[in-house]
Image (cartoon, rainbow, N blue to C red; front, side, top):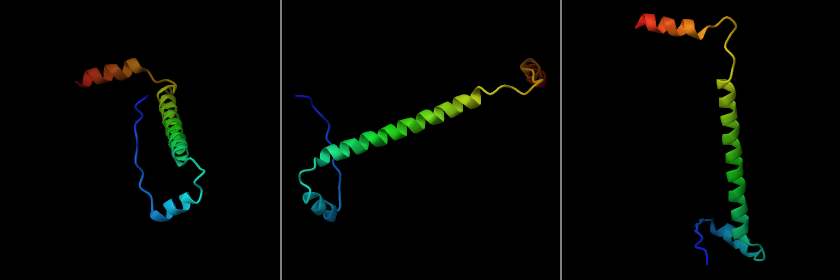
Length: 78
């Protein structure tokens, strides 16, 4: 048997009463699916943010900009 972690969720007594009316529903599965869906949403959001950051880093330098000149300027100021 696999040792599966357990979580506890506190709900309002009224919600529990209403859930009992639908005792044929596997509420554990409902919660499991909701968690999986939320994780998927967060992972997609993180991926979109990473792609946006990557796009900003890959921007081309303005025309006429020379990195060697900038580095030489920094070195002269030291």
